[in-house]
Amino acid sequence: KMDKYRLVEEKVIGAPGFDRSSADAKPANTSTGGTMEDICVVRITPQAKPRSCITTAMNILESGSNHVELRAMGKAINKAVTIAEILKRKMPLHQITTLSSCEIVNVYEPLEEGLDTVVNQHYVSCLTITLSRDLTGIDVNDKGYQPPLEIQPGQPVDYNTGKIVAAS
Image 1 (cartoon, helix red, strand yellow):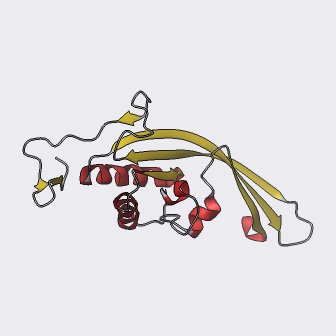
Image 2: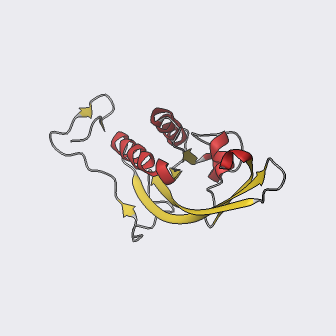
Image 3: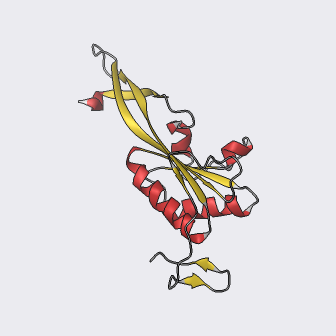
């Protein structure tokens, strides 16, 4: 039983930018300082609300940044894909999707005498979706590249902004 142990260390190996400790502390974004690359990242967790992630990404794009990166691990991957599709329907965005995996190593210390330290290792899928307003820094020959969606006849559009409001 693991109730006699406490987690003392968690390492994410093989996935740069997927630090779970910072993702848990800030479920929607990293907009509290850091470099420009850090500010353009929206980390999506299973607990994150999709609406707040969409708002954060929209604010990043509207504040002058040409790109935003959506990052998710494990069970949050389907939520990241949904958020990316919603954003692509709100404005024309180029997309590059990268899928990888990383190893998570958890170290547990016993709370009682006589028990050994437990090390748990498992692999988790990692997804990075880069959305960009233009082709700056985008490789259109990348196998994960998707061009912006085209407005098709009969598709609902917000006539004040000329943007798509719903998918067909």
